[in-house]
Image 1 (cartoon, rainbow, N blue to C red):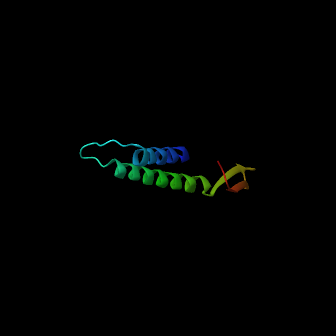
Image 2 (cartoon, helix red, strand yellow):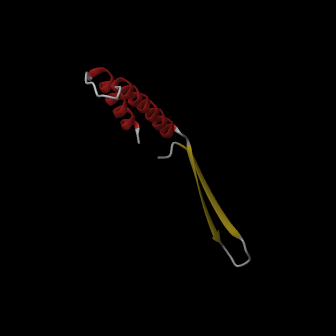
Image 3 (cartoon, helix red, strand yellow):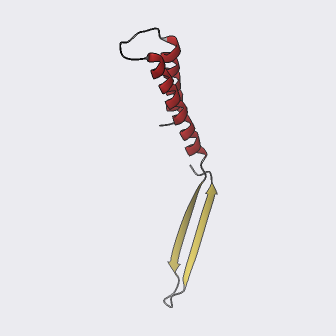
Length: 83
């Protein structure tokens, strides 16, 4: 689910709530539209939070240099927006 899905749910909910003048027995289409709009807002906000979340990656490489046990360690860390 992404930002587009949230916008789509919101638009469909607005159409159902405000533009349709149908009557379905046992179903309140205005309520269904409001529920879809609410779900669209929730999905949109969760997607925005997940996109802007900071991530970090750590890459460690170890290489044995000689038989006496001396070891060379290289570590590289990247922080920030990693996509």
